[in-house]
Every structure is written in C-alpha cells, then in structure tokens.
Amino acid sequence: MTKQTEGIIIGLIAGFYDVQTKDQVVRTRARGLFRKTKMKPVVGDRVKIQIDEQGTSYLVEVLPRTNLIGRPALANVDHVLLVMSAVEPDFSLQLLDRYLTFFSWQKVAVSIYLSKSDLIDANRFNEISKSLAYYVKIGYPVYYKWEDLAAKLPLAITSAQIWTLAGQSGAGKSTLINHLKKDLKQKTGAISTSLNRGKHTTRTVQLFKLGEGFLADTPGFSALDFTPIKINELCNYFVEFKNASAKCKFRGCQHLKEPKCEVKKLVEEKQFLQSRYDDYLLMRSEIENGRIPEYLK
Image (tube, rainbow, N blue to C red; front, side, top):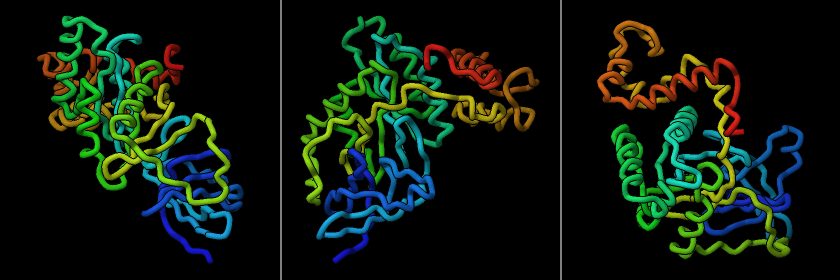
C-alpha cells in the first residue's frame, strides 16, 4: 500500500533524501524523472513523496522554491543568522556589509551574532558594539551571547521557517551550532525505512528542528560573489540607502555625483556610516570589473 504526502528535505545521505513529514522522517530515493529534467532536489526543498511501507519510498515532486543559495545549496531560506567573529579572524565591517548586501539581494532577513567576544578586551568590545549599534538602528538584530540565542531562537523561528548560519571560516559557526544542539537537547526523528544501513559521516547541509521550524547546520556561505548583481540595483540592497533615496532629487539616483542626493547628505551629516558608503563604492567597482576579491575566493 502506497500513499502520498508532503514534507521538507532535512538531509541528504549517500543518494537518499531524508524528508520530515508532519509526523515522521522518511528516507526516500528520487524518481528517475529528476535526472531527465536536470532538477536536483536539495536540503530545504518542500517536496511530495510517495510512501511505500513495504520497501523504498520515493520523492516524486519538488514544489516551487523561494530561493536557492550557498554551496552546498540550501533552498527556501527565510532567515540567516550571520556569525561574525570578534577576533581570529578579526571583526570586519567590510565583510559584514558584504554579507548583509548579499542576503538583502537574495531577499533573506538577517540577524547578527558576535562570536568570541570573550577573547577581546573591554575597549575593543566597546568599539565593536558601538559599530554594531548602528546596524541595530537600521533593522538588524544583534546578539552577543549564545545563551541569549538559545533562549530566543526557538521563539523567533515560526512555523516551517528555515533559518541558516552563515559566516567566514573560523568564525565559530560549528561551535555555536553545537552549543544550540546541546542546550536544546535536540532529538533526531527515527528514520522510517529498512534502508537505513548505519550512520554516514558525509559533511553536507542538514536541518534540525528548532522552534516551529528548522535551523540548518551548513558548512556553506563562506564566499560571496556579487558579480551577478546589476550595478544600478546595488544601492537598493543597502536598506538605509533605499529608504533615504525617496528624498533624492533624481529617481534612480546612484548616490555618486548626482546633485541633491539624500544618501550623500546623510553620510556627510554622519547619520549614515561612512564605512557603509565606502563599502558600497567598493562593491560597485567590483561588479563593474567582474571580479571577486582575492581574500574571499
């Protein structure tokens, strides 16, 4: 007896897709039609599966995606928890702006977590938190302690939402996810199939249940490519620039040498961070020249 149901792919192991349905995790294989259409199901995909209680269950349809980001890929991301380290590697406003702009382009909300703050002195911490206060002002929540995250994330992740960690290598993503898993005493659902032949150690994206939705444990999102962004749209992905541009004299103002530009006025008045504006110019030049900075490759 077979039946069809819907679910979310939460893991990919050795050619099998683990799908979280309403009440269980089902290990499935993808139907051959995906090879013909060159459509590769990925973690985060909302799918239809055919459950065969006698043998192999099959993934039969991938429902439309809202986005597909990262390497390895993750679909339908609602929110990014961006891990920025205070030290080792050193905190960088330029890198922070790159991530925020990239995810703004992808239409994904972002919260910021400062890791390793216990490894810096009080002066440096105050300096960084002063900079981050600006980002709170323009709409990005900032967390300084993993304990706060452990308390607040389950309430923030609403029904079937997918959140993911992002940040450069060494920023502390793995440490944070291990804290969260341990603190929240996560229990993995039993795999409902006879095909589970022991544990695999493949390092891929996985979703684990948190709050009303999922948090992705992923090694991805360490390098960002801005070259596909249209240069005249870049300013729209700086949230405060976009809001202020309504008062610019010219529609479609690029905030360069145009007269009566509200963004440049607010930068001069120190209401907008000069470093944000400088990073905007840097990204423009990068898109223009079609290159990715060496340190991010």
